[in-house]
Image (cartoon, rainbow over all chains, first blue to last red; front, side, top):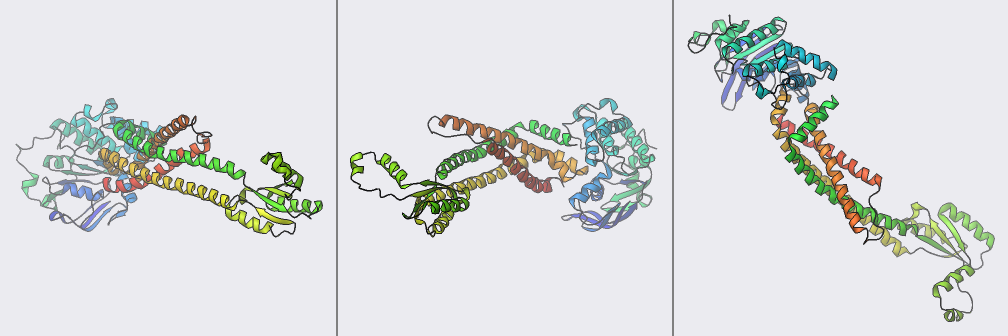
Length: 240
Length: 285
């Protein structure tokens, strides 16, 4: 489904990813743990083709390597469900409109089909009753639920989540992680980038650690990343 | 889906009223200038048409031409050049007498010196200097014909004025087209930048360029439509205020007005498409 083949990414002099090679298959659940600026977001942006690798090849489904045309890039992104740390919701649209936007962009459905589809997604993320609310009227947890609703509404085969619990207090974070795990259990592949070991642990699946641009299997990573001091990170209700 | 694009365009239009008003104001100014030129061109063309309708060729006949020959010649002329009217020598004298008016002066002339003639109202395709000149050269070769007159210099000048007006209209049209492109390009750039977050989010969700651009395109066309109507209104007010002082000054016909609005909207569509193609490449990464 996703493969990185000796991928290096530089931003000028700064090395974001250093010769990264890994694969992710359909239905996999993967967490990438790393400090801030370790290269997690770059990894996700390479998958969505927001940036191109300096060297190496990124393959996502049938979209292989190089610089995709704008049309192909749009097509690729339509096959993904992306959850951003800062939610990326449109402030002048209601919860319903934000989620419906993803359905309209996918372009498969008529106006009549959009409403039940969006309502179903909102019910799944527990925002059915807030469908007419605007983002500024929502809590952080509700905004993240809205972003997740938008990511899953088209039933993508792969969901990318960049720090999905970053701005949330423990209770909301636990609920969001439970929601993501449920979506994964229903068949979607899940790739989560996080700075928080307990999130990576709660997500389960294959764990990777990204440190100074290099990706290693979590089992081979040093203890400093995967086991931070308990005082810094309170336990998550949804964690294992 | 199409309704969605219109809703989005309207949302953008109302959300950025300041930008929209500036664009409409600038477009109205450019289009009004074009409208004034069209009004001038239309009225001048009408005047030329009236004068042009009077453009005729006078074929003076030889004195010894028989009535049968005149009939035959008339048939040929009607077939090739236009509609002839026979003016006998007597009729020509009568017209001349009416024009001169002074009986004493007329008495000084012993005999009628005027030749019979054919006044030919030319076919529309011959109402230009080159065609008339060619026709005159052909007609003078007929054995029944003594001479041909068609006011060569007058016709040539008329054609020059007409051509200059067409060139002026074209020039004004090009200037206005450039102005429209300039105004729309900058307005769209500002509008897209004002909605940069929206464009980026849509792009990251996989929106095609068409999906992102369509509401902006519709908004630009809507603004141009409003501006074109306002410009037409201004031209109408100008025409109404000048009409009492300039005899025969008429407003643009409905087809011209519709073409003016339609042309402006088409131009807005093309200019916006070009502008958005460039802008979205930098904004929607």
